Length: 493
Image (cartoon, rainbow, N blue to C red; front, top):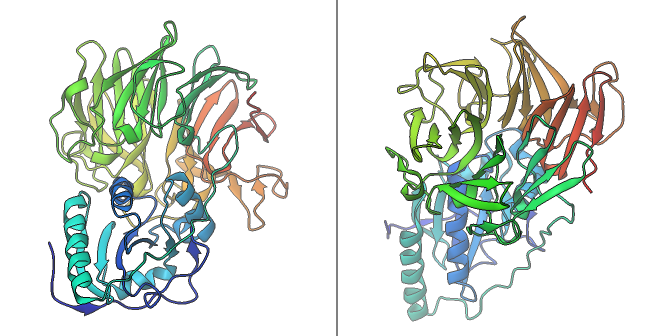
């Protein structure tokens, strides 16, 4: 793990944007410090899994001459914009400085070829550690310990740790990065208020009926005021219960609205392995469940961390892989041999399970009777954009949410900040709501209206002729009336 071969680290470009710090950093300024570089991109589930590791390390070495820096080398076009990276820094509550790696120049200078990659520099600016992938806590910690000891003995260690002032601030909205929503037959809206670590239930007028969760991040079962979640995403109604993909707890939770009680159905609170046969729900570790869909005692789980879709049987309490081998790709066919890529949105209609396969910018479906997967739109890991037209030519950019009717699929095309429509009758794709060059919302028959645009919406649901949209980075729920093409805000109160 520890590489004593020496190579000099290239200096950071002086004109690049820095986030979460009140001043730009340079390797010359960091001389005398151990520097840990995290090359990441905010769409990447493996990068998300690495952030808690870095947070633990930052806490362990706080006050010592060790500096952690995120190098954001964006995959998608949207991920190359500074304001979007700033939202990601806020969303994942990153405490260390982040440099915006324009056109991946730093990535290339350091010879990086995978997300995430950790590089450690010694106090003299030499590269002494390089490793891609998750789960590096012990290796990074051992490397830091050796460097601190060696350079203290040599006298090349800084006497004091460099003081870096974080500049990111949390929002003060009712919602904080709402991830997913689900609407019951009676019109109750369940919202995952992700960064407030809670679930909100309102009616269609916005009147809040339930607030579920204390707001403190954690994993605790109990009543609505004491239960704890950690950045939950997917929610779905199942009769009088709500099922929740409690994403960063790596668990599936159930909310009993009759008894005002939250219980854990699956997951142990620790991230599960890449490959797993499943097992009894509460004893089986799982990995970053991102969305859920429910039908007659079966809960389908978009297991983003495994690039699979799993099943949880409410009666047997067993959770097992259902679709995808775990290899990240877009390959159709029988569910056992198909490849998925970070499935992040589910919607069940009749005998079809539609899903947003985010890393291949695809919308796909599972025929639940035949147990086969078919791609509707999407081609590959690096084929994305914003193109309408025939489904064979259309392009999306990291969609996270879908809902469907008999002939229509509505898509939260997240990194295009748009709501797109797939017309299954005509095999055409068109944009229903999308940003114009002037940052306005472009609506059918009213392309010049000047209202708040969507900002990386993560989910969309249809109810009574209206689309309810989790407008994630605007911290809002938006309502689009299909009868008159108006876009409003759901006024939660």
